[in-house]
Image 1 (cartoon, one colour):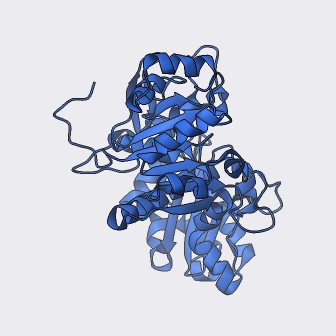
Image 2 (cartoon, helix red, strand yellow; image 1 turned 30 degrees about the vertical axis):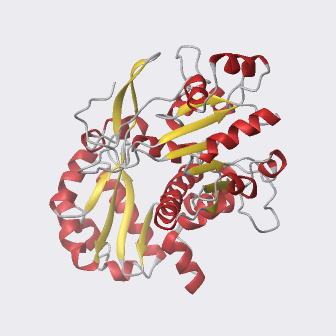
Length: 405
């Protein structure tokens, strides 16, 4: 139950109708629901979206995958392969601000919910469509996945060490980046529509999102042909030193940006200076010009850092004002005190699973805070939405019998 004393959320009054599946499409609208938008998610009767079946466990009542990407939305079932189903979709779109789908290219056109179809129903609709490759190009009609976008967008090559087999991360970098891009794009489209009364079609892609994620590294390659160095220790051209090392227990940590002027004081504080000096490694800019000297430096640092814990080394590095921190595994990241304090991980009450820990919020608003809901049961809000459209209970039951809803 919503506390009447809680502040009004900024997207209250915004309505989105979505036919999005898996991750990059739905997560955008879960975030909108966090901020108060009414999001109506359409799923096929009987089976629902395939994401409901992903990462299910026999000992837990809900899918972690579906719960994460659909929290706070309203769920209805609708068979859009029937004439009556499409008619109901049009009724929903008539009063909506946003419509979104991320089916394989061509599906929306075949079934009557392409942009050209829906602007006839609602000229102000902001229409979002997400594909693997984008609307143009030789592969535009092909399906794609998160892993494929990571591979083709260059992210996989950026993380693989030289000479090692390349493979995409199981963490959905492309899908989650796509969700963020979709969220920003829809907000821009909504703002434009509210200011002008004019809707539009917005097209995004997983591949385009990965190129965007490369940021200034892609620009550096385009301008100068420079590629990111794929090494655990690297000296950037400025120069400054970044590296990851293991402590006495094998626990990894990272520091970044040790400059030439900081080289001696930082290495002295760490207890490395005597060994570095004895090996002629007193100047970071000289080390940067020699692979042999760089390897010798790494060997010395490895030996020193293996003599104590990362907590010990991080205290020294932070006292020296060096950017540094642990390389956390999932368990450590989820319990990091900074993560907890900033509500990046939160507890929510789930009607079937009880109190559960879930992803929180990557942002903090002073006047209009986000609030997380839970994902809907299959068709949970069908009757509520159909009644609002003017259908009677008898008509709703008849549509169920005909497998329209």
